[in-house]
Image (cartoon, rainbow, N blue to C red; front, top):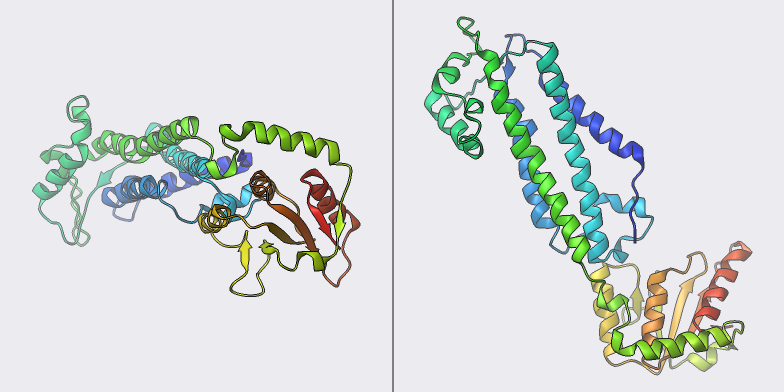
Length: 345
């Protein structure tokens, strides 16, 4: 199952990063760019978001908003497809970070940026130095110029009431620290998550509940052969012959709390109900569907699984009072023929 995003969405993510980068580097009335705010927006928050994403992508929860581009109901998302969704999200956020970096490098080349720091709660430069040293411990050994020293921190501190405007020739020396921070705390975590997703997708196995085990391959061949022979015929029976059958309401609300409904709740909950039912399969299974919905592969997989267990199955199509296109019923009839479902009149 593939997930294709429109090209404009990637372009929007890159442009969003450029806008965030340019907006963060706008001069304030005091003449200096707020270093602490830039680091928070460009590096701190993206790093926290990457950490949260790394934890949530391996937990069962509602799928990301990108599911709407797959044009599939949320309950249908399996683990493999869920990883593909996260992969696209990480790619988009990586493009945002890349846009920030592009804006930063561009303005470094064509403007004279002056950085400064100020905090209402932290007034001691030594604390800022300790904090900066902790942040930059990743690259201290191989990029020492990107680790601000105490002299740079003291000279670039400004106070809102009485800003220090003397000896600020080194106010631009913060750029290596910011550049390294964006690489390490913004882009690198997303690139790692993209790599993890790609490896997981590459080595992921299809969900057992959606595919036929190898041990039953001979049964599958028999079923496929019989379907080919009788796919041109459609068997009709009255509803009275299926009064004792177990009814499953597919993608429609069940009339009672005891009735089985699938396709509306969470995918994991649907799988639990289905596996419980197939643990002790009924003799007859009546699928109740809405004519306004189209047959999908998820329903076909479950029909196939029940058929392999010897369950006799029928299809009951609910038709609304309003007029409906003729091709809708033809679609369900073709589905019933393909899977040897009895058509309930």
